Every structure is written in C-alpha cells, then in structure tokens.
Image (cartoon, rainbow, N blue to C red):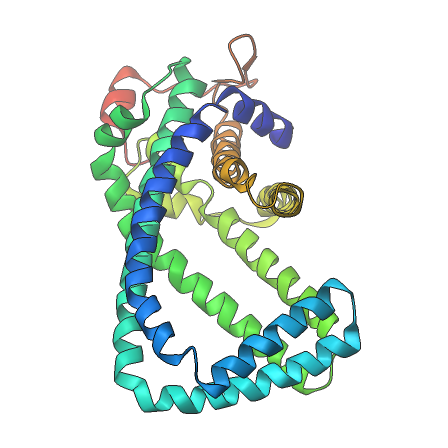
Length: 323
C-alpha cells in the first residue's frame, strides 16, 4: 500500500520534477566547469603517453566484447587493462604532488555539489509536504529561501555521513570483488555480485535515513531528534521499509537504463530528477503512515488512518523536539 500511495503522491507532484531538473542542471553545470578546469589540462599532458594509449585501446576492446557477450574477449581485454593500469600507476608516481592537489580540490567540489543538490532535495521535500498536508502549491524558489537555514544544517550533517558510508561501501565491496577475481571467479559473475551488493548496501542506507527528512519537515524535530527517530528501525518495521525501497530502487535503475538505451540518454533529463522525487515521496508516505498522519494523495483522495495523530497549532508552527 505504501508503494502505491508513493506513486500516487509522485504523480500529484510531478510538475515539481521540472523545477528540480532546472535546479540540478544549474548546479551540475557549474560544478562540471570546475571539474573540467582541473582535469582537462592534466589529461592533455598524459593523453599521448604509452600507458594511456594502451588503456584507451583496451577499454574500447572490452566495451566491444561486452556488447557482443564475448566472454573470452572480455577476459583478454581485462588483462590488457590491468597491464595498462600498472604502467599508468608508474607514470602517476612521478606526479604525486599534482595529482593529490587536484584530487583534494575535486573532492571539495564534489562535496559542495552534493550539498547544493541536497538543498534542492530538501526543498522538493518541503514542497511535497505542503501538497500532502495542505494541498498547497508552494513555489520552488520561495520554499528554498524559506528553508535555506534548515536545509543547510541538514545537508551539512547528512552529506559527510552519506559520503563516508558510500566510500566505505564501494571500497569494501570493490576489494572483496577484486579478491574473488584474483581467485578466478568469472568476470560476469563478479559484475553481478558487485552491483547486487552495492544496491543492497545503498538500500540499507536509504532505509535507515528515510524518516530523517520527513521528521524535520513535517515532524518539526531538530536534527538530533530526527536522526534518533530515523535510525531507530528494527525487526519487522525495518524489513517493510527495506523491501519497499529495494523494489523502488530496482524500478528506478531499470527506467534510467531504459532511458540511456532507448532515448540515447536524453530521457535521463526527466528520469534522474523524477527518481529523486519518487524516493522523497516514499519517505514522506512512509513517515505519515507509520505515525498515523492524514495526508492527501491528490485533490480528491485522502488517506485517513484509523487513529489519526494531529499536531496542535503551537506544534505545527513552532515545532517540537519529539513526537
């Protein structure tokens, strides 16, 4: 039922997708300019070196073999890629200072990018909350400005924690998969295992943080209380939320993959912001139903729990630390 309600809320808020798209395009475009200014000069200096030429040729060979499901060719290409990477590492060892400096700047820009995109997600969440609670069509810019302080504090905490989790998850999974590759496990099976484990780990993260944003926006909690509430999942409740997010993640991945191949990537302009939006809808629906809160699916349909929890006027406008 939560899955169905999330989809209906998403449809009711679909026009927000275009506002989120415009915001994300502006943020990503600005950050891409900085990335390019850092990476392009360095790549120009190493593009004509022998290790880089060999790596480019091997990567093209691997892509062609993968497209044709030529497993023997994929294995041969991977051996070539591994050899090329060893030569490239030796080249990089002579430019440690330049590389470290560039990586530090790239990481900082990436964190700023995630911070700014997170503010957009917080704004979208506030707009969805207004529509679910009061049928109010809140403007994107006005909502962003109104919630800028709360959104900044939330993302100042969430972005570093999320980034650390992502790095650890990808690093440990990658190391485990590489160990299995050395042990002789087939490459196609390793790709399957890597993608499956990463999806499961990211879904676990979304499950434990799913109530954080709704608790801030609707529940009027502070960040400490919202985090405590969100990370309090256990047992059957965790399994319910995890299963819903897992199915939703697979659907999102399928739609984005289809957009890449069926529209030559153009469809990603809609599917990527829509993916974030439907995940936010799931978070708010999950929060409302777990806390017996009445909310609108659309202008004609309202979800009314058997025992409804209603905030007082003072709680609604001033907020409270705990519900």
